[in-house]
Structure formats: structure tokens, C-alpha cells
Length: 76
Image 1: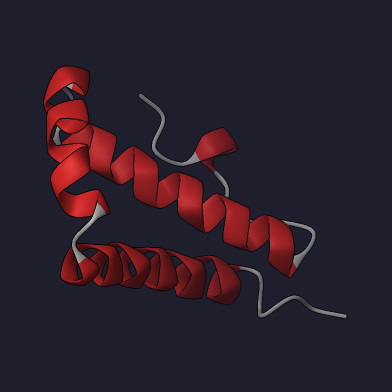
Image 2 (image 1 turned 45 degrees about the vertical axis):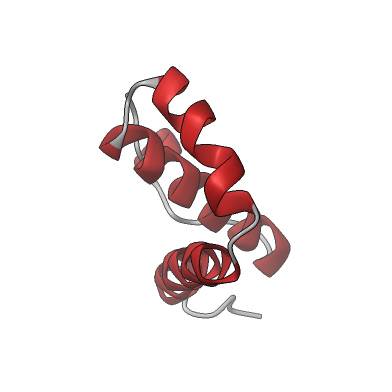
């Protein structure tokens, strides 16, 4: 499983960088818990829990910060 598509964090725009950050976060969860049925079983519990959603948002924010830094915060 490729955790970083095309082995690069470089994106043309911040919007694409944000999309990449979300994809990286999702791939991380898939790597940590590879059993799709387990993830589907757990999803209803965390999908309605504010703390779980905040934590997921934090993971995406960290991924986005990494992507942004790799792109030198999108050079002009």
C-alpha cells in the first residue's frame, strides 16, 4: 500500500494540498486498522462523537501542515 501517492507531497495548489492531506489521513487510518469491516463497525461511534471528530480534524491539520511545508507554502 502506497501511503504517499507518487512518493511526493508536492501539489500545484493549496486546495490540492488539502485534498492530499485528507487522503493521507485516511490512508494512515487504513494502515493502522487494515480490516475494513472493523473500520465500518467503529465508524458510527466516532461519527457522532465530537471529541473523535475533533481528533480526526487535528490529524488532517497536521498532514496539511506537512504538505504545506513540503510545498514551501505554495511558492508564487
